[in-house]
Amino acid sequence: MAVDVQLVVDCAEPLALSRFWAAALEYEVEDNDALIGRLVAAGMVGEDDYTVVDGRRAFVTLAAIRHPDDPVHGDTGIGLGRRLLFQRVPEGKTTKNRLHLDLRVGPERRAETVERLEELGATAVREIEEPGVSLVAMLDPEGNEFDVQ
Image (cartoon, rainbow, N blue to C red; front, side, top):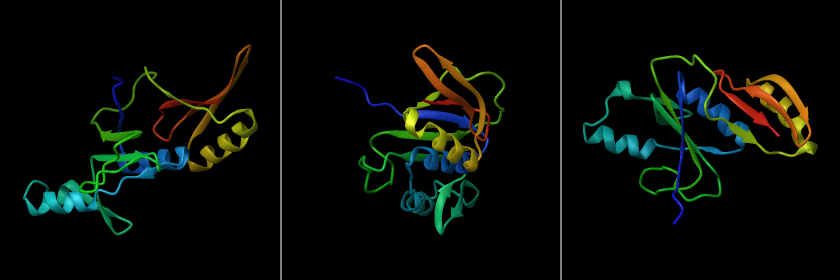
């Protein structure tokens, strides 16, 4: 049986980076307000552990996005399908990613997608045109590499 996975991204600012990637992938930012409320009531989370964004509580050190068509756990707001989790780490990015995302939009949507991603804060690094490969290499707002194919 196949194994479900989620991609975890170490970063400096989980809330900001999750919103970038939610817009980039047309995913939804997870709503953890109810979960945080229960954890606060149980004394497991303090005021320093969350902030308020758009009137909803959100964890300061963790933020996730999910595919809009996938199921969500009703009690926690956590996505049960395609999901990216962004977690704060103390160290900054120092080398090339060992893993990156390829956004496969097709040649007819590549230019408009790159432009949209640049407006969101990404940086186009180079275009690669080789036999069998056509893509734009980019960096997200924290310098993580990804490609638009």
